[in-house]
Length: 206
Image 1: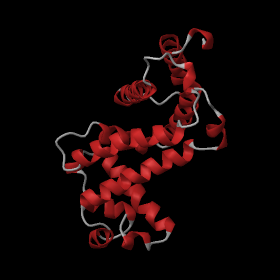
Image 2: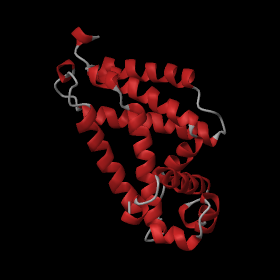
Image 3: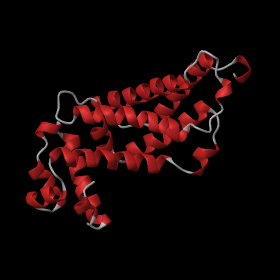
Image 4: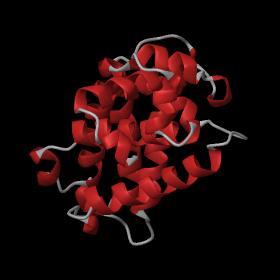
């Protein structure tokens, strides 16, 4: 985030970021119009590029904004009290889905960023996505009781697979123009969790 953009009031920052997120959610990166973003944000295009070096800088700032919304929405005191790996994933996932259900543009933006390919921002997004997975694991799972796992199990790989499953579910609902249903994904996630527990946990913890 540029220093010039930081000088704006929080209200104006959010207004610009929400406008950009909406446009980037609706259109592929190369087709997303900065004129439209400026119009929706209520600023001139020249002023938009006063705050951001270029379109790529704006996009990556929106990416960090979306990441912050989800992280802040998921993190609470209860999160740090849960020591069971699968209970922690379930708790965080359901909170994330609730945020996405209330903010449809975040869903569309996240899907486009995840499946971005051969775009100017593709390389940066892949690096950010890889780093974010590792950061989340190190930050939010450092208090988990890993003694429950069988010796040959890598919990990080299990986390990745479960994230892919949830993201795939969200993508499928989005492509079918179906709303995110907390009850439905809760039921599906409970089945996935039990399946992974049976495969990865020691018998005494089942």
